[in-house]
Structure formats: C-alpha cells, structure tokens
Image (cartoon, rainbow, N blue to C red; front, side, top):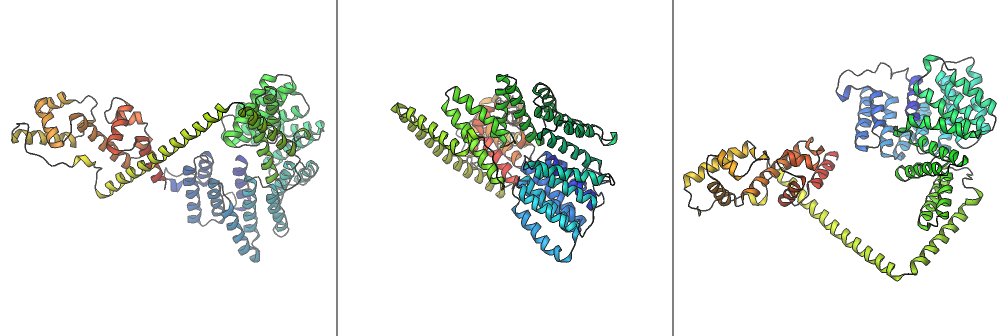
Length: 566
C-alpha cells in the first residue's frame, strides 16, 4: 500500500503546488485534521473497514468543503478502496473524462487518469493501468510537464518489469535517467529507478551493471536518505546475491530485511516474497528443514491473506513433493488445489501469455494429478464402509447443530428486538415479571412495616446499591434496619421473587441499559461486565443475563455494535 500513498502524494506535489505541506493539525477535532492525517489513518486501519470508512468519508468531506478537485477525486478513490470494489470509481472517472476532454482541461484529465490507473494497479490489472498511463502520455504532448512525464514513464516501466519485459523496462528507465541529467529535480524518483535497474540487470545476469546501479542508490544525497531507503537497498542487495546464487549471503540480507517488515502489515506482499526466497536459498544449500519452515510461512500467509507473490508457485511445488514423499494424499490434494487456484488467478489478471507453471506442473498435468489423488482417496474410503457411516452421521449431526444454531440465533434476534422496542417505549428496560400487583399481606407483617421496607428498597434501587458484590439478604436487612425474615417476605410478596432473583434482575436491568447507552461498556469483556455489576463470575453473570433477557450477553453486545455501525 505504501506505493499508492506515495503515488497520490507525488501527483499532488506537482498538480496542486504541494498543498499537503502546511496542512497542520490545529486541534483534536476530526474536522480540522490534515489530509495527510486522514490518509495515514486510513491505511493504518484498512483491515477494519468500519474505521477506514470514517477516515475516507472525513477526507472527502474536507475536500468538498475546500472545493478541491484533486482531493475530491482521491477521496472517492479511498471510498472504493475500503470497499475493495472500484467499479463505481471507474464509472465516476469516466464521467469526468467525458466532461473535461472536450474542454481540454489537461491538468484535470491527468489527475483523473492517474487515479484510474492507480485503482487498476491496486487490483493488479496491469494492462488496464498501462492503457491509462499511455493516455496520459498523449495528454502531456499538449500539457507540458517534465516531472509528470518522468513519473508516468516510471510507472510504465514498472508494469513492463512486472510483465517480465525486461528490455523494454530497462530502456524506459535509462531514458528517464538520461533526460534527468539536465533536470534532476526529483532525486527520490531517481533513487527508485536505480533500484529497478539493479533488479533488471540482476535478472538479465548482468551483475556488473546491477552493482553499478546499486552503488548509485547508496550514493543518493544524505538529505534524501531515510530508514526506508536503507532497508530497500538491503532488499535489492539480497535480490542481487540471490540471482548470483550466493545463497548464504542472500540469506543474511533477507533475514535482516524481514526483521524490518515483519510487523508491517502493509508490507505483507514483500514479506511473503522474502519467505519464498529464503526457502529457496535454504533448499539450494541443502537445509531442508529451514526450507520447509519458510515454505510453510508462505502457505500460511496465502491462506490467511490470499497473498500471491511472484515466486509462490515454487513454494507449492516444494510442498506437493513433500506431501507426495510422505504419502499424505489429503495434504497433497490441498496443495494442488492452492496451486491451481493461483494459476487461475494469474491467468485472469494477466492478459498477455503467462507461462506461470513449469513443464513438470503445467495445468493439464496438475488437474490429472489432482483427479488421480481424488481417485486414490475414494478407493481408500471405499475399503471401509464404517467410515462412510461415520461421515454420514457426522454430517447429520452438523446439520442438526446448524438447525439448532439457526433457531437459537432467530430466537436471540427476536429477544433482542423486543429489548430494543421496550427501550423505545420507556426510558429503562423492563422485564415481564417485574410489573407486579401487591397482594394482601399473607405473611402477617403489618402494613406500616411493609411500606417502610418497600420505601427503603426504592432508595436501595435508585442508589444502585445492588451493584455491590458483597450484598446479601442479611447485610441488606441490616442496612435497612429490619430483619432478614421480614425483608425476604416483603420481597417475595411485593416483588414476587426470591432475594437472589431480585438482586440479579436489578443488575441485569442496569447493565442492559448501560450497554445500550454507553459505548464504553460495549468494549468490555463478559468477565469485566460481570465484575462491574457485582457478579462473582462471568458464568453466573451469563446465566442471569440469559434468564432475564433470553439472549447471551456476547450476542447482545455484538448486535448493539452492528446497530451502531449501521
């Protein structure tokens, strides 16, 4: 994601005269935060779509208030990014192009197509992005701007490099450097080109040229160096050693680089790639155990995050062979399915011819091997009819559990809705068995004593003394200056429940109202909530909560959070 933040900030620098600079935070209110603050916060919380949405909308609202075309455009891009759906954004961009193309507003058209290309690159639709960059190059013929021209060529070169068109990418990067000799106003872009050329020449096995540009990267002026700059050079140095087959040195550099990025979720693509390269290095140095460990890491990232690095297929070739040697058919089938899915994804996202599988694992052979494994598994299963019976029984049990869970969830939903409706009709939540009609005293307690105790109980409830975890019948009777027998009889008669239910019901009524009106309580664990209202354990609290509301506290809290987010 770091590239996309840089991408926007770079274009903003040239197209709106560095408006990001000087956008300082005036105070703590969200409305007065800077654009840079919103961008950083958005990407930091991108996995939490609810939070990311807040920052994206705040960004767009600020842009609309300031009537800034550039920021409004990028704000719409952010809204599409948190949804991970850019179709509306593309339609939005196309509508703007239709407006501004006849008017020949080239600065606007450059911004629009740049952001459109940005969106395509996020979705790894490289050819569509390339089409937008080529359209920008045509516009620049009318709207002269060397800096934008350089950056667009840089993106075109990067796409060609990703498509393994090394010569074309090399020529573009060298052309940019040649022109920059007379116009070196962007050393950061120069440094990025050095990195790309280091990689290209290493892939072309021209190591002298690769080291030449690597040294050029180290020679960037001090004021433009940063920790990220140093880390990136370390990575390209590792890549160069890897291509030279100096695997021991490559391992050292890669491990150092991994330490820098392992906790940065934004760099997870690069982390996956580094793990595959480390696994290959260990395999080449006959350290099978370490190779296996890093291939497992790549597989874990793919399963959790669906991250596909450029060398990931080598991970699955390794894991397939491993499971085959261990005669683990189930594991082998899982890895084959992953490899086929990855191949399908690569073919879908790359329009050009993409020979992504080796001769030993082309797609027809993969499918044939998959079918062969399935046949073996079926044959093995058929040997024992008991397994089938157990399997069918298990499925039936699961279905019954699912039916039970579905009914329970529906019941929870109904009970939750009832609680919500009750709140709308009254200031506090009430339960069915708390609206009571006093009966004639059947416990031989005088009317005066009953009324006195009831009056004290009203104060007890208003002061929320029922939250005291140490409260019991004896202590409450002492506090009310009566005896336990009288207090118990009054509660039984006038509240129509025993002392324990009376206290628990008050606590549950209290916490339900607090949860509905105080979002802080929604962040508490069940155990913390139990302690807050005087229960000795989370279990006793949960039982009481369910008894009086017919829903579990965890479900109630989750539904409240959903309502709040909507």
